Length: 586
Image (cartoon, rainbow, N blue to C red):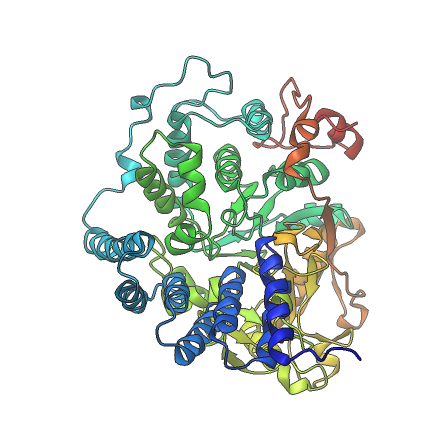
């Protein structure tokens, strides 16, 4: 006779399996195990606390707070639940709530040095934030105060040398990619040079970048690549370098728009931003960098970037280094507009406040982006077309059989921003006159997702009178992100695709006649009935590059000679085979 296994025993088995998965950094799978344990033992505070920890690591801060609160309701003396709720509050910049939870945890466990340190750090951080806010308009930035020449270069340093007055050209960029890609680090002197110089470049740019590509050149390109859009990178340096290999180096003739989230989660965020900073200095019109929600102090303190700085420069003033990098992040633009038609942003559209482009331009950006409009731009997500949302979590109203679940605006599981539906996106796009949107912020299985689709059909085929069609795409470029086995892709926009969007946006503004030059130099108007078939965006996939293979991947990257390019450092006319050979990939 087989032994009957109790619900409590089964729940404990699920919990133990969840613990093993959590230690393997498989947070979503661990969460699934804890959820099964909760179904069998709904009054066990440990299971709720553990699931809260998974939600925190996945960035679902509202869910983390809810589960930790439930754990506390079940056991008011459960220290871990207070601590985990404090972490989620901290991530949302809810300083008072975090401090209150840490105080309670410390009262319950007064001899725990870790809790005491966490509480002291939280109180210190609050005071520092208040101080920074008080002097923000009265004091010189830390990054401006730094004198790179005060930092000596080690005698054994054998990498590229970059001083304040030096031109950063293609040769320097190639040396930087090779040097940093081989696992070596730049002296602090050159780190500060790059920060100071890129800050000045970014400072000259508006909140909303206007990227205007010449129409004649776009038409000449036709189906060929005109611009690339890159999603989250999250410190995956070798995958970033792989992207440069397969898609070419940025230049005026091969421009890139980076949608943010360069750091945190993975161990090489500093290397990624230093390469991007150098490329931006060398070619401002070939590299466009936007701000993500992970280019913020709170998330950097909690998701690995500050720890990375301490590891890379253990003998330096890492607090000062982090403050300077945070100031540079404060200068990153918030969004971009390509040829008055294609809107690019990290997170979501400002649909709640229906902010115009002029309103976005007027935001005070050189600070931590904690205002309501910035929260939408950096944190919001589109509603999902099926029952599963980000990281496999239930979507906000994402019933696969209910079209209405794709409509409206609801609170976000992240705790900041909103989940917005296709109707809200369409209304905002019409309000500002754009026809397509590219955003990042979510790891998705295929690397690129056409948002607002249902059963493979575009949303406007399901709901009538949706004008314009909410053609919005999510792009995520870091493959195998946090063990999720997702593809990493960058969107590749052809010349024909951008011209098509330009014409649609012009028609939306009432400019219905599209001029076309014909033989003899005369101008003929193309009738709307002859509009060409829709051209979809393309993509390039990034093959995952494990850190263990970095030396083989980076071998023989010396390229020699000038790269040329139209004021940049791009590989004009170079093909993939040449690129692989140059970058050490036969």
